Length: 223
Image 1 (tube, rainbow, N blue to C red):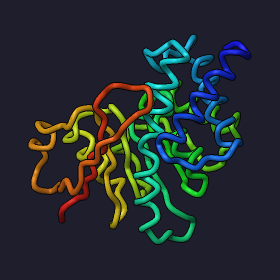
Image 2 (image 1 turned 60 degrees about the vertical axis):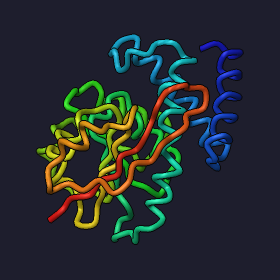
Image 3 (image 1 turned 180 degrees about the vertical axis):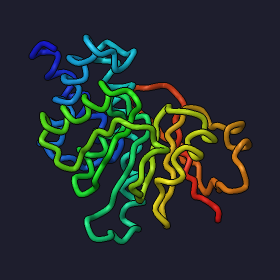
């Protein structure tokens, strides 16, 4: 990205963050912009995302992920951290969306991004080092093979709600919830869920600069 384009995108990012109602400092804005540059650089070689244009990356990836942060922060504020703090697992994180964004915006949250593709997990670890995010980790594995447990298990455009909840169930701590970012209200996917999963809230999101339906499906397991 040229210096001029970087400045323009940073201004758009600040404006979008303001519209979303987030309170981020200049270091966090700089980290988000550095992440955008890193994503664009690695994408040329490793095909992390189909979106190539920096402007589209800003709206379709960064702002789209940022729109979910206030909801996540509200939920985290209701939890009492165990020793070692609160932990989130982002499933099928790909190019680190929304996991890297969550790690930047929630520095006290330990974020692990799991992906079955080794180069994508490697990218997450490179982002953690480059952006100086000690709370961010890339894991190359299938989610169902993980033994650690997390307070929140999230995904964005990963799989159906049935597959997501089935594969990641063992990763949930006792009080944990699923946080699934979706496009249109997923009526059919929700109807397909078994009796062992309860949808307790569907939250509509508004993404600055993006004229598309977005929502979060909040779920918890039923014993």
